[in-house]
Length: 64
Length: 134
Image (tube, rainbow over all chains, first blue to last red; front, side, top):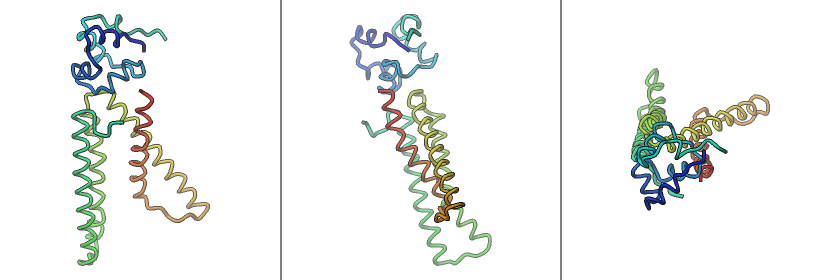
């Protein structure tokens, strides 16, 4: 699933490790989600939405 | 490639595996000593023979505990996928070797090695599974 995580992260000047710490997951998890190769669960997607203060649909898109 | 576990649950998993394997080595040594020096008979033989298998069963429980404790869904998914490869690999080896024993008179392979093959396939598959997500 495509997403804007890299952009949102860059706007805040966060590294993947910074985001991983805030989400309490591994950096590998953040990388896998960011590259669109691993789709997060709904609870993790909501956590991301809260963290970036944005609706889920503005972070993730189901377009191929 | 990082070799250390990525999460707290992963570190606990590694520590628990190390402890159960240490217990396995100690129990195996103790069992061998008992068979060589005490020459047990009757039901005691079965009891002693099954003792080394118990810590190995505990390692499987350790995997289950890790899956229950791991809050990082990506890491949990990697382990579950590698477990499936481990189970599939071990069952495949057992099936093929069983057929070889039945029809080609291949030497007998102890059923114990199915457990060993489970871990071998599980361990080998993990880096390849991780690679798919990079």
